[in-house]
Amino acid sequence: MPGPIEFFIWCACFVLEVAVVVCAIRANVFRRYLPLNLYMAASAIGDILRFRILFHYGYTSREYFYFYYYSDALLTVALYLALISLFIHVFKELGAEKLVIFGACCLLILTSLFSYFVIQQSRAACSPALSWSSRRISTSSAWCSRMFCGAPS
Image (tube, rainbow, N blue to C red; front, side, top):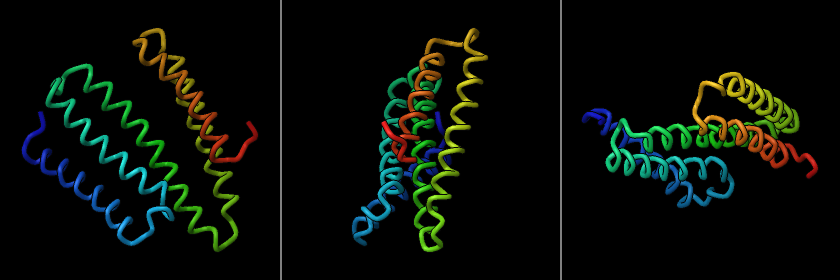
């Protein structure tokens, strides 16, 4: 169980995530920075769910373990897409947004392939959830490359 300092940091992060979304709505820039705001909202929702699962099942439970790591993996991909969208905003004035998109897609695909091969290599000694995640990595990388890079369906 988290101690008082960890609990305070957890609550402070939640408040700041909600504050970012509220400020974006008030400033009428929610849609302009949609991926960043969706990441912040998803992170706040994830914090609430993690907190609930932690206190319902406990810190050492499998439910908390799986939820924590799978939600963290999804939030990492969402953060990656949010940061790429910010880079696109910055490099749009220089006319280099297509180069940023191409580089981001290459990096996403290479990272997905690396993760897939690492999971395949250690698959024999791991749980069925890990084998499920290896199928999800290949599916999600294909979906992200089609959505973000504009590849034909």
